[in-house]
Length: 189
Image (cartoon, rainbow, N blue to C red; front, side, top):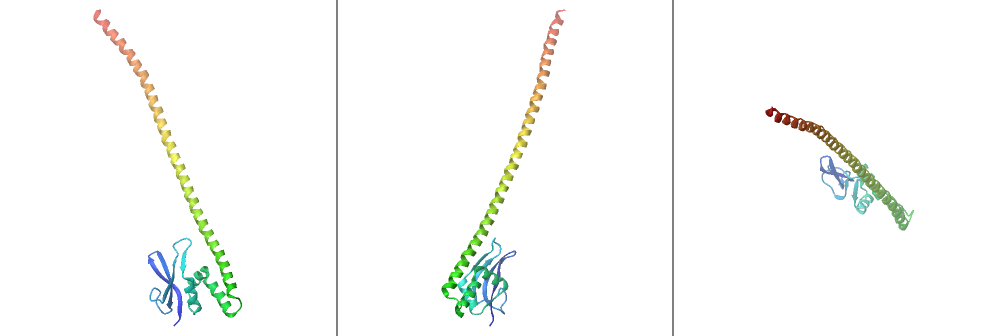
């Protein structure tokens, strides 16, 4: 019975998630499996890979063949390196302590790379958010300046209209007493 370590799809349309499963090679993709050893979510940035490394290593040492995608994920997680080192220990090329030391050094370096990538992505998001806030503030300020300019124009126009009406009222008041004075004089004559 040929055994493969492969992905089984789940999740909704266009938001796929995958289970990393150990299954018979003849079984359907999403069908029967022997053991679920992890999950893979490509929708996050960076993609989240959660695999039980010990069980994956045990299946690899027992002869299970990973698919190309799963092999890349296992390499990313260090399972393939651990298998390589373990084979070296079995053959007597290195000791178990040396293999463990090499794996721990690789693991620390890998975690540093992953953390720096996560930090750079978070920093880029923060910078984009800050630029959007600054652009919005500038747009709001421009809008407030335009409103203030319109209010000042309306105020100046109202003052000009009031100033134009004031002389007209004064001339109307001046002509009105003259007319009343002429009206008073007329009956006496």
